[in-house]
Amino acid sequence: SPLAVGWGEGQMYLGSDALALAPFTQDVTYLDEGDWVVLHRSGAEFHDASGAVVERPRIRTQASAFLVDKGEHRHFMAKEIHEQPEVVGRTLAHYLDMSGGKVALPFALPFDAKKLNRVTLTACGTAYYAGLIARYWFERFARLPVDIDVASEFRYREAPMQGDGLAIVISQSGETADTLASLRYAKGEGQHILSVVNVPTSTIARESELVAPTLAGPEIGVASTKAFTCQLSVLACLAIALGRARGVLSADDEARLVGELIAVPGLIADALKQEGEIETIAHSLAHTKSALYLGRGGSFPLALEGALKLK
Image 1 (cartoon, rainbow, N blue to C red):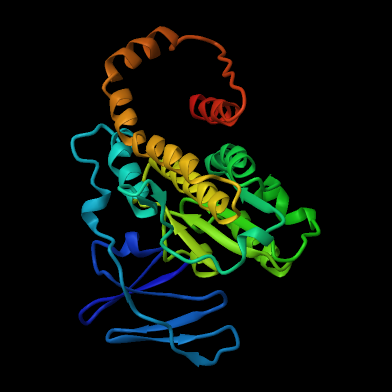
Image 2 (spheres, rainbow, N blue to C red):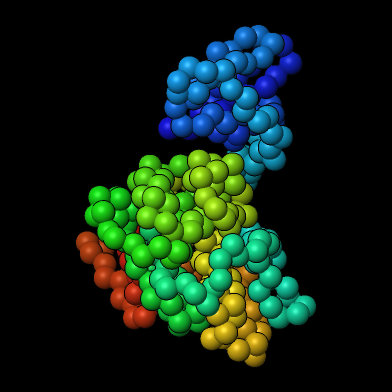
């Protein structure tokens, strides 16, 4: 489990992450694997797994107690559902040159995309379903073969992996234990590691070669909503970018796909305007004993995600 040290005035704090410490301080130090710390009223002394005194960076976070207020909504899940147009738009703006009709990744790829032989996707829960949908995009737009497995299974398979492949790990928190273990296995197999996370200071992010953040803001609700749609937004941009870098996706197709992505926040907003009609349907189904979700192609994993939410 992660551990963060919060720096106050004449007082120190311990918490799981910056968000937990947000009501008290925005100055945080994260411990590395195996670290331990001795706190004093005026500071902290960090030790690594061997007991040696070490320095760990102190960072200023953007976490705020305001971000964990549900406002006028009945619960956090409702708040986060209604935040989707804003946060998906913010995430897309981070990855798109909207006026140029291009994907503009905020980082340079540290490998030759044309020499990539395979993409491996791994995640848990809803993030895994985001990866299942993205598999269609990487295969169609980037013409790359894709392996995907639930991280809790992937970590134990001991699958041989050809060097210089790309492993993409997806996690809202960036702390999912099985996903972190899968990352470390893939790294040991010589894979380039790209993480799609909602917490850029998380353990998974810190151990990744590349970090593609989702700008969803804190997700308090247990059932993922806005993080899922932001993960899909990032993965779509990555698939298009790899397709262009590999020379298998034309500029015209890129412009068309970018145009479709730009329209997504507005389409989500339109869907949310139908909340009254959706509530009526929900009431009519409230006493149903079973439900069947169906989907084909990219909609098949979406059906799995819908079924998960209804359960």
